[in-house]
View (cartoon, rainbow, N blue to C red):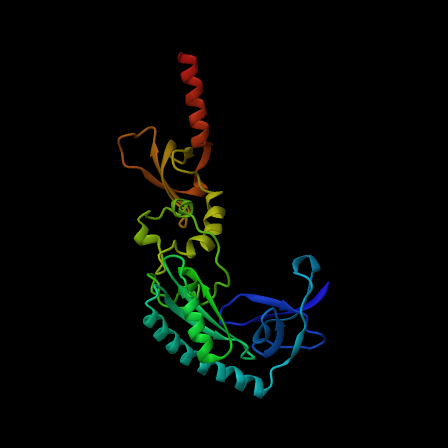
Length: 286
């Protein structure tokens, strides 16, 4: 077991683990750590705890020190410089007529590098832009192209649900989202209704999928044959969250399907089982 702490460098950003090197820290405390980009100021998101070495990416870098008032002042000054750099870069992009959209600017803590994040429809030749920026800021310049989901996370906003974007509030990482998830959750397959402001499938489809998969284990699927308190029938509709099913009874084929609690229905044959039985009967008829 190894003692670790978790540090986040951006609000709602990914958490990285470090060796506290004997320091005891608390949530929200700011620390200076050594990263691949040099010294960085971050906020403690996970307090001291023990973790299995197999869960960590070795070797762990150590915490350099607790952030001092001077460190915090430096970080605040960097935030101010970022706003100025953003405006300057936008002017350069317009002057060079580049097909790119500037999203965010980030200063390295020690001022040794400035990162410019942008989106674009394709590859961009930004060599002239880098030269212009380097001549103005006299430091290392890095331009990084990001995707539309990353742009939404950085900029924030309000989704179609009326709440702040999940990616800019509590989702630390992006995970693959598929149209199959929308189907299993009985959602409309209209892209405009299941896509977020970024134009990609909504992230909530992914983290809600586990709940739907768990609920689906206890509810018969559509076309399954079940035994209800009123007799045998075929499931015509499933309401997973309510744990209800609509069943067309064999005794009343012309009547509207009746609604039952899933717990009151006993599964007799799954849709796949029905298909296999039909295939067998077809072979016998031949």
